Length: 313
Image (cartoon, rainbow, N blue to C red; front, side, top):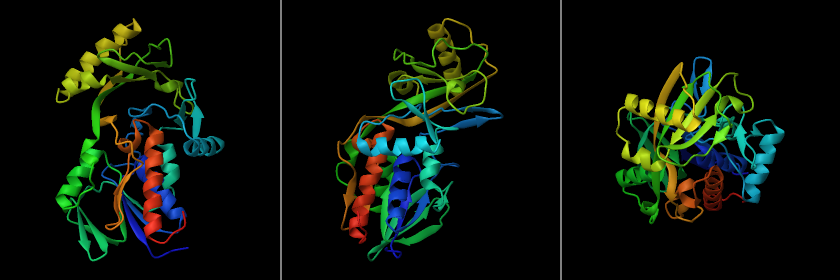
């Protein structure tokens, strides 16, 4: 096994975790860097006291054999469990758990915002916002949302043709603790301003109580992208009460803005990769707006890097 190559994996969501795990399994060393305080990306779990909310992705499904096999492996280990029917699965005890499982035992630097890539001969260094320089690396795997990849590449004088075609819709997410239980564990309303309402406490392994996550529609979120958080909470709370037909009387209500929430235009390519530079990018923006797409894209990018770094597929 090749123990000499080392790859920087930028981003610790599902795509980055899948890339890092596959590279590590092939015998390459990896260093994962992520700007967040924790890992998971949009597979996020917010905790407030003894409450928790899956305020990002609500569930995952498998369409293809690779992710189906991975879901089955996680299910056997108790990392995911079914929820809300229709082959939906959630992480246990939170949506971040599958990403934690993939990254377990690998070096991860959180709260590290990467601002520039620097090439020195065939190898790379990575500079973060604090001025710290990481490396050298034999390859770079970038798994940010596509607009953030573009920003980093532009700052680094590097190009991956086609990436600018990927586009996203934003999403405002409302987290509510209440004593009013919804009629269903998942309500996919999809009419402005409410996209869905999920009963978080109904998911396996969650604390007891009644906690709702409300996602606004992409159109409403785009129109209110820069609105004050308090105004967003008030409007979405009132709209959720209308959908549910009951007052919520929240003991806790907070909103989170996802600027890059859901892929609207995907490239329909597994990943983007330049074998001459050994720099590539992966994410759900390559294949579609699904957790599975992020996983498959990360695996594809790992295979490209493995081939150039002398590792078996």
